[in-house]
Length: 336
Image (cartoon, rainbow, N blue to C red; front, side):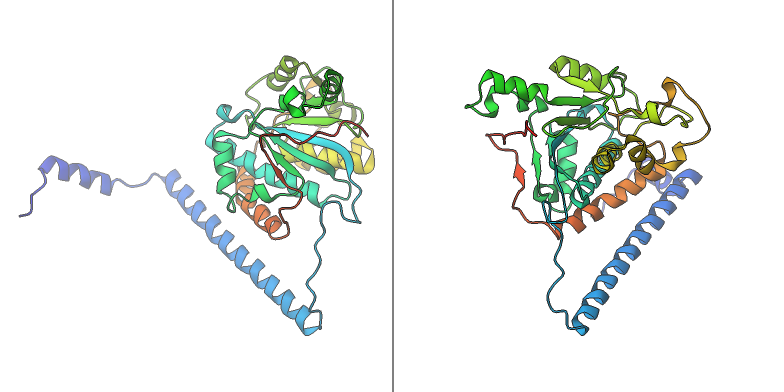
């Protein structure tokens, strides 16, 4: 026996089914469909290009596979300092901002791996919440296979706590703490040079600059040094106070290590669209610790590109050299 639905229920369902999408919703749906179609086509072209190259190598008699450059290879000259990405802001971001942040982490790792003067290691601290869930869901937790990286659920203060190494004395712990510098544009101190043996912390938060003095207050609470990138000293053609992504801040540090020239580092990394007009003063200083692009289109590009970066890197890496957080932390370099 089939029960007939009440007339009111049928009317409600009919209303829901017949309710048309708004014009904006239709445009968003059409745009999402186009982007997905373009992504599928792009990946198909990339796969075909790889197959074509393999066939060409085989026809040329080059049976030996191409050797891939590894961290610490002969063509690299590592810089003996460590960069820490502080991920302890998961509960202060929206889902979209978390997505953007995890994408930037992939680009950060890729930049270091492909640099001729990479930092000796990358440390990601306070990994938890939605950030951890999203990273675990990309390429079957591919971040765990990134070489020369560490992932801690604990905060960066683990670097100088007594648990770091039971053999360390108080003096060793004090040296470690003194070697840490938190990069924040709200600091009164300028970072004029990078030094081997030091540890540089970048705040991993996408917030559209909502939180004032966030990283500065965190550094002061931890009783560690803090400094800002000297952007205002070298660049005075920014129309407004802007923020940089995590990977842009990191790439500026990489470029300085390569060239020992801040001005060249800024001009080569900061997007050219930000250099408009001629202004000076405090408003010309970029945030060194915040990590959000203003353009929604760039957010989409980061989201689309994250898995591609992770996938391309995953095929070239192995587990050797990767150190995932354990009960005993790895020693942090403190000397040149």
